[in-house]
Length: 97
Image (cartoon, rainbow, N blue to C red; front, side):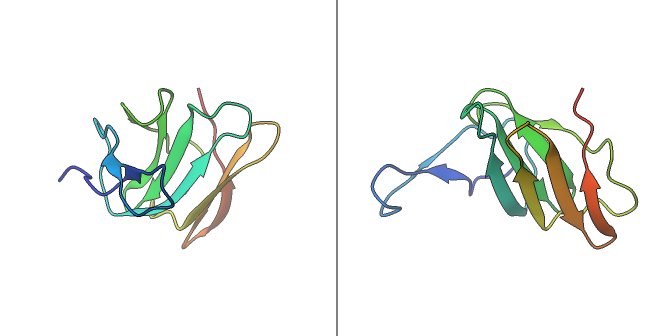
């Protein structure tokens, strides 16, 4: 099933437009934006972590570095662009290729 609940809002979340979701599966549990590049989004889902390099238009799964269960509860991107994800099995640093 494709996600259709990730929206972009410019009015304090009173309204929102669905942003692209090609390749993104849900439920979405966490969202993070790269602090060095606002076009790079990350989402954590029940099927792993996905990345978009174009503001949410297209998504690729990036589970390299996650061990065991891919369910992702939260994502953090530090100032150096390192991505960390929490899962039921712990906290992991993702390898982005």
